Image 1: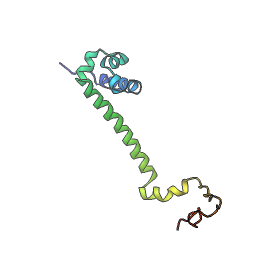
Image 2 (image 1 turned 30 degrees about the horizontal axis):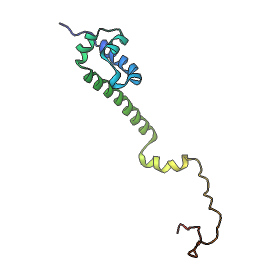
Image 3 (image 1 turned 60 degrees about the vertical axis):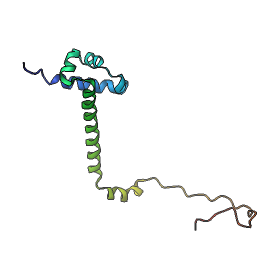
Image 4 (image 1 turned 120 degrees about the vertical axis):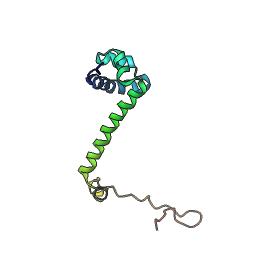
Amino acid sequence: MPRPSRSFDRALLASGRALFPRMGCAGLSVRAVAEHCGANPAMFHYHFRTKDKFLRTLLQQMYDEMFNGLQHDAVQRGSAAVSIRTCPNSMPPMRKRRDPPASSPSPGGRSARRSCT
């Protein structure tokens, strides 16, 4: 018997992707995914066997896309050394620290104001 079209695989994964943010791993059901894409739950089991295998495939696909995007961004920015060197230039100027007003000496004879040195 020939295998059904792979478009069911993609449709089920697309439905899982659409439902995942709202339902999460625990709330995502085989029936909800199948109904969302207009497939019979038997097609879900034919392609993925279990919900666990479906979730692994779905999450792996999502992670792959995320890491590819991060890698692309890193390549566009250049090396880490360049990013570190240019970071201070891209930050807004920092306000100067205001020293607290001078106060009367503390009981030990030292000033309450402390020095960083």
